[in-house]
Length: 130
Image 1 (tube, rainbow, N blue to C red):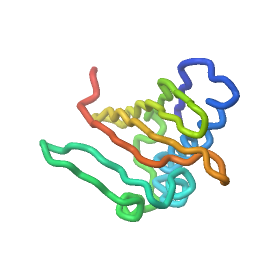
Image 2: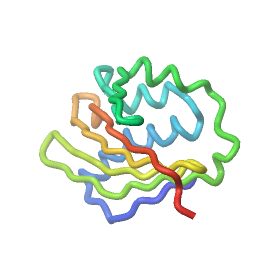
Image 3: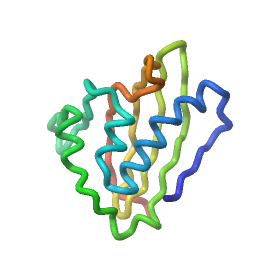
């Protein structure tokens, strides 16, 4: 797994990386258990696909992971672009270069008794630039 952390992060921002790293492992291993560790159980994953809103609860999102890593996993890149923390709330921008598609993910995170968790994710996919 090729992971890049762009800015230097302070201590609280670094704590926000815990669920983000679990999310990255979920993608790398195609494993729902990592996603469940990263997200709140009430999370929704949302995007616009061909002009239509797609909104999945966590269980629907996790059903997409089958435990078989992508054949090109070694070439994939995941980048933490930035993290903003205000008290018990945070947001983060993530870029995932997965072969022919590059995804931009925006996370809203909350600091819970169990640590930081992704509360919701909105994302956009576009063709990877050459």
